[in-house]
Image 1 (cartoon, rainbow, N blue to C red):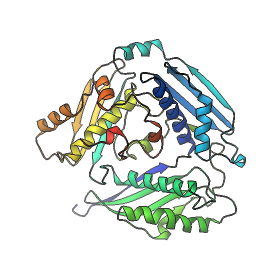
Image 2: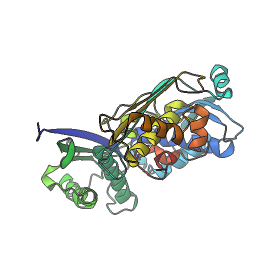
Image 3: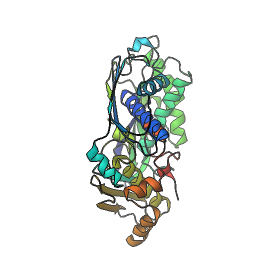
Image 4: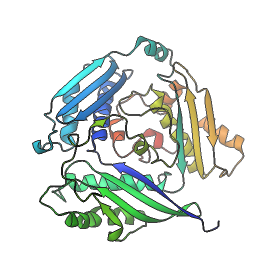
Length: 369
């Protein structure tokens, strides 16, 4: 077993992926509500399909929000300006927004959770960000794919796209990148062989090098069927919250609750998941353990978690009571304690809606204390 090896694969998606269009519209709405009213409550879903956008959900806030304008701005920013894709920032939009259920509002007014559920947070030593390597590589490839399109380095690329990375592990540690898969829509005038060569040089090789890895061009797969010209919602309907594996740990660690995007932070689906990651990351950063999972659970209206557990996967470097004391001192995991401790009642959520909610230092739950 000393040389036991296994493989693990994670995927990410580009910012113009249909589901991510929806996440970004929904979180842009959250941010606009919180910009006008720090105590505003939001639970908004977006659907995009061929030449149509639907925004539905609940908003209760002292705010005047132009939902249609927010959606159009996001769609335009994401590059959907070509009418041939049959979805653009000028596509028809339906807005179906009403106020929050009074039954939910009652629990929030008591400083309780806006929903029930169990949330997981995770951290490990595989990357500088204390995240699993497969998902971090997949995110960085997606970011680079978007960058070369937005900056017109490869002007034939169209919005949308996916990345996927398979890592070979030996002795439970990353050993090498065994394969990379990219899905990148492009204009019909460019041959796939050229697209593959360009993406290897401009995306894959430089990003893998940043992490100390490399692969041969023959181990890169681009557009598995050989053809991807028409991208976006006309080809693949998108909905808020369908990429929660991408949003978290790439399947490497457990997740719970519901999705994040479109929800204000009183929804513990979102805020408690951030709190759990914050605690796990700081435990690992402080070298109390090498691999940590934090579990929190709440019921609707609960002020404090009904369950709080720590799993160190037998990687603990200190006694268990020291870790429990560290967690207790680091963050109050009551709903109000999380909101105040991580300063979540502010417009910081749009950047989370692409390339994952964890692993980037711009977010307060990623800070090391």
